[in-house]
Image (tube, rainbow, N blue to C red; front, side, top):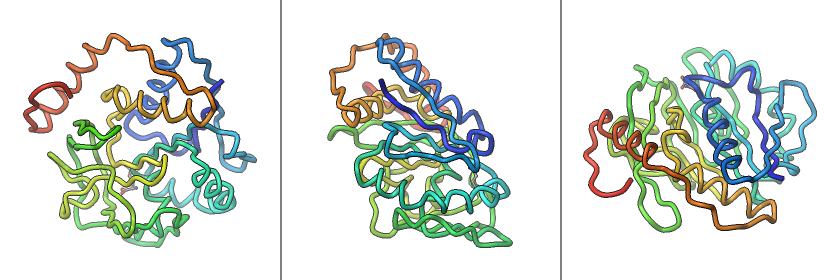
Length: 245
Ligand code: GLN
């Protein structure tokens, strides 16, 4: 049984982010992999060590401000779980809170400092379709999604998730998108990211299975529709794709 956590589902669920979780669970179900989802709401006790996959969606500055105190209570247990291989997908606002801080126009939201980056509100929101090249199992893969953030993120000693092909990514300047550390994948792409990019979803499922001691080759699903959707999303983002995405 894969144990999946959805952190603050009542606060962090922008632009269809919940679809990421639905895609993860559904692609497991199609393969007969049992999954249980725990909603980790504000104020509840959380055992991150018991999870195989944690999803953190995006949120407005206001919502990030509401949850940050509660999140700090869980810092050490989340840190321990990440070091132990917990698979995490953190989107936009959920990504920003894992870094050192997020300087909004009117306050500093102190992050958990688990990954080495900081975020600062920029003069204009970075909005639109975005395409990124990431590396999965040593091969380059193009993923597509939608971004909408005021924060601009600058990485320190942490790898980006990928390289911007079209759109803004972390800050619109340095060509990086997201961050990656151990089994933690951070991205500005809402999308929803996983339904649009099944190869990334399957990669996360494989990592979660490994963490759960259930490592197995994933049965191929009929992805031609999804692949067409990825190609269409990349096209909308202004990227011409040759070959398989
Ligand atoms: N509030 C953050 C920002 O504007 C995150 C937004 C989001 O999650 N889309 O940068």
